[in-house]
Image (cartoon, rainbow, N blue to C red; front, side):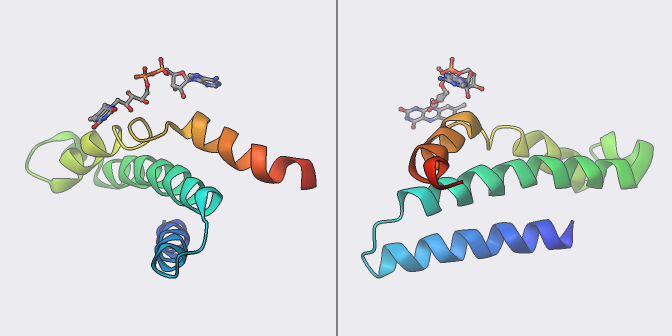
Length: 94
Ligand SMILES: Cc1cc2nc3c(=O)[nH]c(=O)nc-3n(C[C@H](O)[C@H](O)[C@H](O)COP(=O)(O)OP(=O)(O)OC[C@H]3O[C@@H](n4cnc5c(N)ncnc54)[C@H](O)[C@@H]3O)c2cc1C
């Protein structure tokens, strides 16, 4: 989980750095959005699992985090569309 979160953070920081420098970065933004939001869903689901039954009660914050993370992969480019954007740019070289 820590490795995945760190990777998502680094992808996001790379995209932000490119934006700051005025470098075109549609693919890097797509990768960061795609990976970061999917990792958000995966890691919060695992956090619920770690908490067992307590993880689905409102007494623990992981219940809310997992519920809120589900929305991430949908707005501002769904995971599928971000994958399409990445493939359109990089697919031919894979
Ligand atoms: C909380 C929230 C806030 C939002 N805010 C805004 C906003 O401020 N402004 C705005 O304009 N919109 C906003 N939206 C709308 C959001 O951008 C759309 O929900 C999103 O683009 C997905 O479109 P859709 O819901 O019509 O799903 P669809 O386009 O019907 O997609 C449904 C599923 O099919 C997949 N899919 C669709 N086409 C393909 C394809 N060609 N290949 C493979 N898979 C495909 C999608 O990835 C998705 O999983 C918001 C949505 C939410 C939930």
